[in-house]
View (cartoon, rainbow, N blue to C red):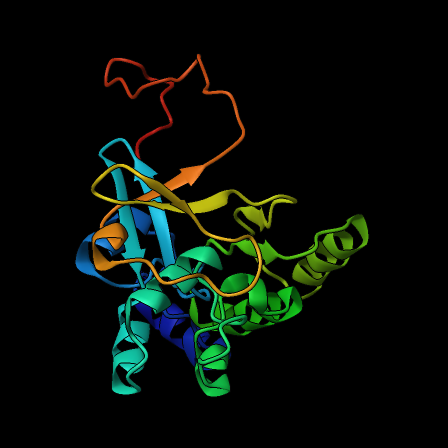
Amino acid sequence: MDWDALRARIAAHGMRNSNCVAIAPTATISNIIGVDASIEPCFGNLSVKSNLSGEFTVINESLVRDLKKLGLWDDVMVMDLKHFDGSLRRIDRVPEELKSLYATAFEVETQWLVEAAARRQKWIDQAQSLNIYMAGASGKKLDETYKLAWLRGLKTTYYLRTISASSAEKSTVTKSGQLNSVANSGSAVYVAPAAVEAAAVVEDTTPATDVKFCSIDNPDCEACQ
């Protein structure tokens, strides 16, 4: 091959970090090895993930470490995080610097998610799968966000994630099977350690009757990650 011409072109125009850096969603793999799923802000500092293997809790281990240093990691903090969907913003006893450091994706202005991605892409040869997180979505905000992504030259965007208009009731289940509902406003109440072992989410919905399962014989199946 004509390597001399390639060297001259790189010397004149530079090159991207080809085949060395790829930003992709690696949700299941990241949970297994204990790292974040992507370069984006954390979706929530405590959440429950469901897949074909069942349900399991995902916790921000760095946050737990910092809260332990301050003597704030206890059963009440666990319940507060559950109640506020993994957000620290409304937990009064958490210092402001920790709230800023561990702000969730929905607490970061959408514009800056796009701006940060625009700066990263200079060093990424392969397209980054950028999720757009938006609290208080509206037609105007959607229009402005995607136009900004286009103006900044993003190669692509991935999922659009918004906060639902209504939230599910948070509750805990004790070993005796008694359901202890958590209030929908204010701080969560203290629950005995035994109650923290299991969590339940109560939703006013009818179970789906057309649930599809993964099948290796089905070429159109999109369930695998």
